[in-house]
Structure formats: C-alpha cells, structure tokens
Image (cartoon, rainbow over all chains, first blue to last red; front, side):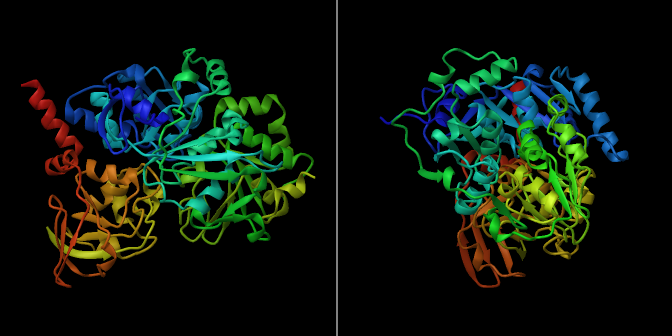
Length: 424
Length: 163
C-alpha cells in the first residue's frame, strides 16, 4: 500500500480514520474556524438564530474585522458594530478588531499549528497551509453549519506537488513564482485539489514568503496549498506563542512513497520579474512584455502583498528615491503589528520620505471595499492577488499585478519597469 | 424546471456575480448588479426559472456566497457549466442552487428553452431537441438540494435529533 500525502494525513486525523484516499467523502471535525466582518457575524447571526443554536466551541473561533475597516459610511459602521456585539454575545475571546488582515493575524497570534484542520470564511484561507495546516475557504452558510455542528464534509483531494528549485534572484519574490504558475498552469488545472509546495526553493524561503505560495494557491483553483513544516515553521509559530508538539515535523509530512496527481517543477533561479495584465492573474508574463505601461496608482496591500517583508522589498527600491509626479503610491500594511515593526526598523520612514501614502491595515482596495479604489480609465500596478474586471473599482479601470519590488519601482518610474534596474 | 438559457463564457468570477462595491448592501441590491460587467441587461431580463450557462471555472475567486445567492434571488433555477470553481460549487449547493457540470454545455445557445432535472442530472434542450447529460452529484448533496440547501437540511437534522 502506497503512503499518504500530508493532505490525506490531516483529513484522516480530522475525520477519525486510519487513512483516506482521494475522492473519498468524509465528515471532519474542525479545529479552527476563522471569519471576518464581511462574511462573518452579519451573515451567520440570522442563520444560527434560525437554527436555534449557538457556537459549538467559541474557543475554536477566530474573528477578525478587516474588510470594512475603519468605517467610512453608515453601512460599514453598522457592519462593524454588529460584528463587535456578536463577538461579545458569543464569548469570542479571539476577536481582533481592526488589527490587520485575517490571514496574517492567524500565524501572527500563534493560532495555527501543523496538522490542524481549519476553515476560513474567505477564499484566501489556503494561506494557513504555509504552516502545515489544512485550511480552506468556505461561504457564510457553510460557516453557519460549522459554527452549529463543529463539522464539515470534505472530498479528499488529490495532491499536486510543485517543486521549487534554486534561489530567486535579487529583486524577485514568491509573488513572481505564483504569477509564473498562474500563467503556466492556468486557473483551473487544479480543480479544487490540494497543492503541496516542496523542494529547496521552498526550504530557503522565510515563512512570510511561503505564505504567498499558499495564499495564491486559491488563484490556481486549489482547495489548499500545503507546505510541510520544518524548523523554520516551528520556530516562527513558537515565537508567536503557539504550542507546537516536538514531533510535528516528523508527523506532518507526506510519506516518501505517497502518490501525487502530478509533479511540476519551477526553476526559481531562471525566473524574471512577472507582471499579470488585466483582467486575470493568468495573463502573467516577464516584465519586459509590459515595460512602459503608464501607472496612475501603485498599490501595496492585502494578505498577499503587504506583510513586513513586502514593505522591506518596497523600501529597498524606494530608499533615496521619490514617487514620481502623476503617480501615487498607496501602502496598506497587512497588520498593526507589522506597521509598528516597520515604524521601529525605519521602513515606514523610508516609504514616507519617498512620498508613499499610508492607509489603515485591512483588505482595503484589493476587493474594492476600502480606500484606494480606481476611477474609469485608471491603471494600477498592485501587489495583491486578483485583477478581475472591476474588482478594485470602476469596471473600466485596469489592474496589473506584480511583486512589491515591481510596484515600488513603477511608483518611482511612473510606468512598469524591471525593478532589478533599481537594485544594481 | 424549465426556462431560458443565459449563456456566458469561461472564468465568470465572483466579482462579476456580486461586485465588491455593493457587498455592504443586502442581496436585493447586489442582485441588481449581478453580471453587469459582462451583460448589463442580465439582472432585468432574467426571469424566475431561467438558467445560467457558463464555460470553465464558473464562479472563480472569492468565498462570498452572495455570488450564488444573487442568482437565487433573481430566480435562476440552476447553473450549468463545463466546470465550477470549488468554492462557488459548495456555496451554490448550500443555498439550494444546483450546480450542474455538463461537458457539452457549449452546445447550449443564448435563449434556448431548457428543461432540467437536477436530481437525475439531465438537461433537455427543447429548442434543439437534444438531451445533455450532467456529471452525477454525490448523494449527500442531492439530499441537501432536495431540502433546499444546507440550512433547511440542518434544521431538519437538528429537529430529528431533538425528538
């Protein structure tokens, strides 16, 4: 009998079975349910009331307000008010109000551990996979079902393995790897199966960069994007206060004889900076294909592209330079703690000196909810994950996607350029 | 159920189905703008019982279930596509909207009159006089659809458990 993949091991554990096979439909117990202000209380409250039940285990729920923060009108104020009151009424101790984006809050507060089976009320929930947790996004009705019962059905996925080899050149990041994969694999080759990232190219990445791989697994159509834990994973989570078992690294990894649906290889060393043109992440290509495209707005934000490491990348480009007239650079750091860290290490000063405009921590303009949306005819280069038509504002706006290096370089040049030119 | 087909292409995303700018409002307002980025007339022309037909990866993107709920609100009876994004597929079933995977969905033209049996996985194209087969849905999802979605399904289970 062949061995099991990491995905199969976690699902087997969560469903109380010795092992599970791809295609097998099981019911699993949920270790952590995360939701935010948009898909959370305002949606699940009436549903739980209809069912006449409360939250099955408030200690397993994490609630984050990140979509409508801070309130800008009557609707968003009411959504946040409802969220806060529901958290109190339901005894949700792990409620983080305006502290950052949910996918970043989870590891930052030490809520994740390898082997956990988690659901999130947001499509970028696969981000938790970077820490060896099986985490996937669900809608609000399904979240109400989880909150009522503590359980969810899952069809055991096949696992596709993506092996990264070599080191990224200076001026490139995990974002470039994912845009490259969006182009080469397309957005529906992986039909709700699991991805597992492996190889020396992953081992060499810091945890915050590994999060980008797992995060954008959503764009590739995967249910989750797993990375087996190693010493870096355990060190990161323990520093964040998580209790990690000593056998986590040995236990939560795929067997050497596990079966993969396919293996794909990426040569990180040979990669050029990638830019995705409107209106799909799959429209990615090497930066040269889009060089010279004028940019009205350069946006560094969202769970994908505004962590401390992303701010560091932008600062590397912007140190001693200025955002050019006619282009604006908006920066919405992914969490309050990261904003504080960037203030302490001088990164914020570098960004401010260059003329960047600082926005509150939250999902911001990425999904068109918060500050920084686009007018008709405007062009934006963004460090976010999605550039669907109209997502960041007017349907007649154009969003390109790139790494924080590329976004910062475009802010200086006023057009899309190869960021490596600023790092010589 | 029978109605007319509204046909769209590949990669219909959740921002098209439920645009972000309207997400802070209730479903009636979101539904008014459903698919307007690709077909400005859709929300006013579609009638209860009609069908939405897509290509590959229908519903890709966000977890926002308003993408499926907007279609329910407009009375769309089922969504037929060559493939669905996994999250949208689950959301649709949870809301009682049948997502039917049909390899030959491309044979359906705009305005075709369809009669659909979601439980049997069969589409009758009354205009073209042909029958298209859908991938069968697993039993537990057919049961959920029969009950009208996850909430009524759970309600039934919880009541049975309390008896």
